[in-house]
Every structure is written in C-alpha cells, then in structure tokens.
Image (cartoon, rainbow, N blue to C red):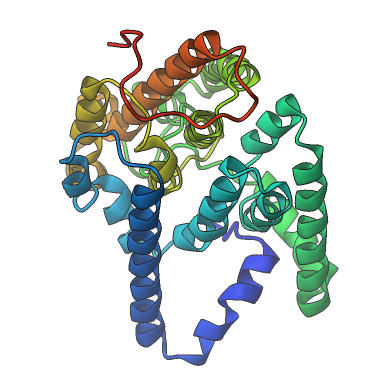
Length: 333
C-alpha cells in the first residue's frame, strides 16, 4: 500500500524525523492521546454529551483506537483543525471556520462533504477562506518538496484500489471482498465484473440520501456529523480510525439509545482486526469482518433521519441554530 498522505502532511510531520524511530513513535502516540483527550473534554464542556455514559468506556476498547495505535495514522493531526473548524462554524466565526477546514482539507482532500453543506447554506466567506488556505499550504509544500511531489501523490491517489482492506469501513469494502481474492478475507467467488455495478447500486443511493440530508439540515452539529460519517461510509477508503473525526459532533446529538448500543457492539471488539488472520470462512467476511461497515451504516442512517426530522421541525428558525441536546419531542426510536 502506497503512502497516500499529501506532501503538506510530510512538511508538518518532518520534526519527528529528528528523533530515533522508536522515540518518534512514542512521542507521536502521546501527542495523539493528548489531542483526543483534550478535544473530547473541551467539546463535552461546550456541548453536554447526549450519548449514554458508557460510550466513554467504549472509546477505550473500540476498533478505531486499536487500528489507530497499530498503524500510527495521522488521524489526530487532522482531528485538531477539523474540530476547531466545527467549533468556529457553530459559533458563526466564518473566517476561522474556513481557515481550519482548509487546513484539514490540505491533509485529507476527501473531506468534501462539509464544503457541500457550506455551498447549500451559502457560506461563501468560509469557502473562499478555505480555498485560499488550501492554496497556501499547497504552495508551501511545493516550495519545500517541489511540484513533482504533488504529481507523484496524485498518481498514487488514482492507483488506490485496496477497498478490500480489513480496516476499510466503507460500503465499497463489501463487494470488493466478496468477488475477488484478497490478502485478508475469504471471498465468495471470483467475479470482479460484479464489483463495480454492485458498489454503485449500494453507494449511489447512500450518496444521494446524504446530499438530501445536507440540503435540508440547517443545524451545524447534525450537518458536520452527517458529513463526516458519510465520508467514512461512501468514499472508497473510509478507514475505521476516521471515526474519531465524528465523535465530537455526534456525541451531543439526540440519537436513540439502541443506535449507540449497536455502534458499541459492532466497534468494541478487536476481533474485527484479528478475524482476517485467523479465519478462512466466508461467514466471517459477512459478519465480524464487516462489523465496522455496519456500525457506520447504522449511525449514518440515524443521523440522516435526525437531520430530516429536525429540518422539518425547525424550517422557520434562523440558519445555523445550535441543536439542544435534550431529547426532541418527536419520537425517533
């Protein structure tokens, strides 16, 4: 698997290369833990969590944590500007929101769905600032590494065809694992010609429903949660550790308790990561191996329903009103 991180990421990560590899790994994990703890605690003070108290315990034993520690991904590096952008957006600081989201976008360009919501809401100032910020980061990295680095990176992005990977929580993963041989899961049969049509049959309706939800919803908390969960679900590569991005927004939403129970059950076990190495059963491919996909789909459906329900109840309210975390009068269960 080729490194798909942008040249700008390497510019930010470069200071760690001054340390021995083992020390750099420890420092990186410590920074990652500090970022997540500080960000979640700060969010909890700003927006009282509406999820069950035991979800805090689940965070210590769920697949996104194990996969993050195992691979040492840059999720925390993106978590910082992404969360700051959300805070600024919900506080109506349009320039700051655009700057922070532009910075996050420079690290992970598939964070497009938040921009879609901004277009629907007419947040042109935020969009312009985000574009300028992204342009500046590209120029800075190009000065350091040269434009050839971006050409090489773009070529590698186009060649990313490992949707079957064990940590992929996207809808793309299911057909990809079923009809081709992969290094991890047992496949049903070899029919690669079925992968594209079946993937489109699943992903296109989910994408259209996401756009409809983003078009209807005015609340930034719901919109950001829907956009980031959908990033995991409908993009070709939606790694399990991307779940850390939507946790701050989703934990304050009034979702039915059974939704959190289902997400916890499907995401809490490290068996999800071990299954490909210990089983050659197609049943494992459908069940435990696909658990993160099912968790993303359940949460996505619940947030989408909340977006459509709240948009009907608040269509006369001022654009961008903050969601009250008390249970809504409408029965969402």
